[in-house]
Length: 195
Image 1 (cartoon, helix red, strand yellow):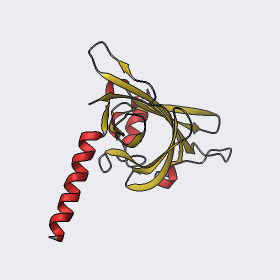
Image 2 (tube, rainbow, N blue to C red):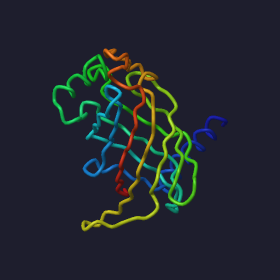
Image 3 (cartoon, rainbow, N blue to C red):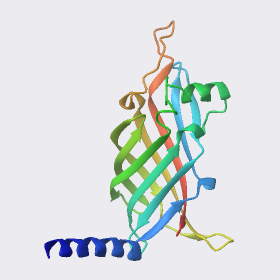
């Protein structure tokens, strides 16, 4: 009897989530994850991950985001220089063959005012999982595209230390500075389609 009650509660929870929550999926064609990092202490190198997928869940009224999951194909990295991209895919950096995917799963979404949120979640990259906080703007208005799809957009920013994720490759320059900085600035522009 106890088991039957437990199963009933679980089934109801799954049913109500699927029926009442609004699910939105990332449109990869209109989404990119961009980054920049200091180079030789004098400039910055920028790049993008061009293959991003994910899911956003809103409450049934479509007013409050409840969760977000993002997945990035690391092999889609693009800095505009093929030789550098291949080095970044190697074991010196992302080690794409061993760790092909970067994922982010939200644990808490905290409203910060109209169209602004603080998202606390777990980033899994290079075999390391750590808490990372995102600043999110958007998700307020909807737009219908010419094909009848309902869309939302969001602008996401974050900062992380690559060494926290075991990406430690570097070289010391003649000046004593290092070739590559530790802090990475992240900018993700997301477009979602309502399912």
